[in-house]
Image (cartoon, rainbow, N blue to C red; front, side):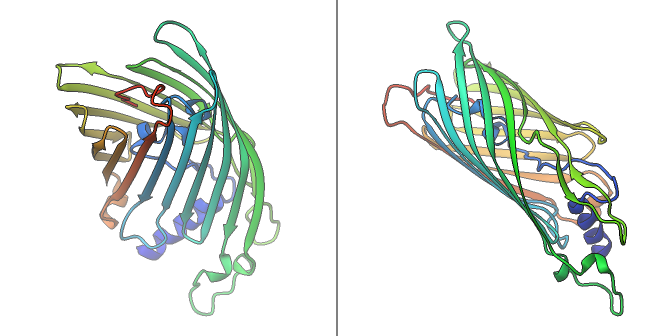
Length: 307
């Protein structure tokens, strides 16, 4: 079963033979990793913000996905913010690195409301080490005789509206469709990566002076694949400890916990339990993040920040 699963993962990483599916990585703690999917989020925290996330999926399955992200962003003027975002994604023999610069421009729409428009641009580095794949003895396949190494420029865009207690965003972080492979011999024809669209939203309900309820959701859509929807219900205690549950429709249920070590530094962990048949062959998914806000001016920091 492990070998069969690895083959499935390999085919997924190659996007082979016109089979389409969700290709961009998913995140359980998306509400603390927003700049990766929406460049308009840059600068919305009012400080220099540094976010790091690591995700190890389907533990126990050889070649299962591993993802790491880095997001750095800050306001640089009254309405302008700049940032840097990077994603490293590995699945089977396939490795993809996305490196982007982010720009956002924010309009004040009311006393509390802000509307931001964002752009990101950069490069995708795609490597598939096919020659390192171990094939059954005496099985020769020309498909695995040559590695794939390609680089692609790309850009993304997003819109993000927020107040102190509400946000909603729409984005497409990779707009250009990338053609990875196009072979005639031994099949695999026109394997490409499609544009993904993200919708995010959340609200903070103040239940008491020490307890807040933070429901949120993320929907991810791509042509030719089912809609992926995450629904989260988090509770924040004393502005420090946050506990929650997440449901990814038709895929997994998750437990989340994060803690504000200081008002500027928050760390979090999530565990996903796979609800599909694939759950019989793995011991779940682990995800950790660190979020650090550094306020040099001591004037811009919006405290506390709920998302």
